[in-house]
Image (cartoon, rainbow, N blue to C red; front, side, top):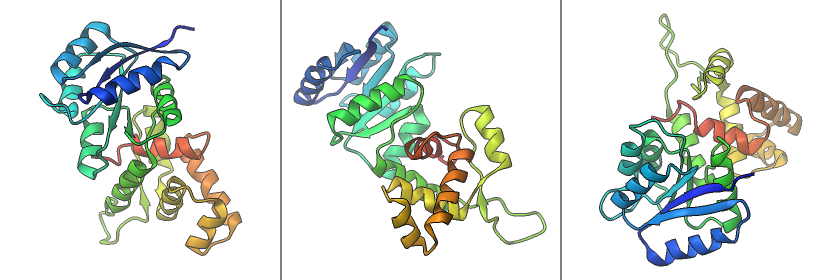
Length: 236
């Protein structure tokens, strides 16, 4: 199997060199280029068309969000992993709106970063739990459509997933407000027992909600469920 080809765009020399050295020790991942500035990085991406680009937001000559936006104007198979200290809602939503596939904070462990690269390459996404909470909070605050003959809000929130098949499923079976509450606690790392205690429901009821969430989000496990939620049309 060919190694995952990665380009690293990071302006802090020590961080960039440290990441390059650490990733070089990982089997099946190869750094094929790196850059300290956005314009140089954009040229590298266009020239090398790597499998994954690790991009910092705070670049000196052009922010990483604009770099992604410019790079994504042309068709590409390159996946984008944002690596940054910024966990603000504006930064997160701007990155995904520009076309980022994954988003990890710089204080993530090396093990988490490697997993992020691998998942991003495979077409999934790595979402730092702190960031996932931001997006789920956004989802909870997004008003549902009103019924034409009623002033009451719907008790469900529709998720328009990126893939057409997910969109069709979720349009037919939207997450309920309770399921969104459970999903938010899952992202926060709560066990079924902890969720039951927080929501004042039984563990059996929690398990039912979790099964429904996984089914509606076409997810195999809890982590993937949070990823599906984040990569959905609830954002933006």
